[in-house]
Image 1 (cartoon, helix red, strand yellow):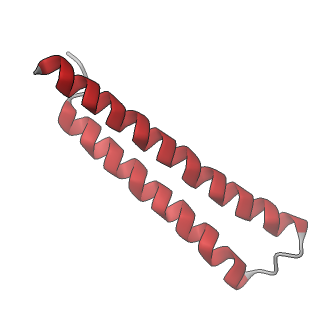
Image 2: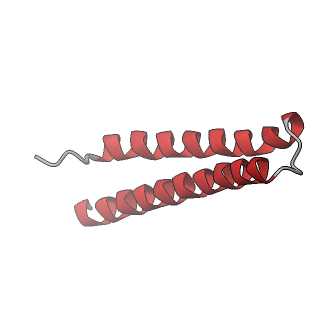
Length: 74
């Protein structure tokens, strides 16, 4: 039994997109609440942006797998 059904992949892709949006929101709000002249704060901003990028890449990979699944089953 394959645990990666199309419905589960769609849910997983949606989750990754929402997590990426949360990371981007954190990156956008960070400069409003902290002074970016401190090295640690720049690291946090970089970490937030990196997290968003990772989750966007994951969502893209899941969507590509869904497209492949659709081509194979049709």
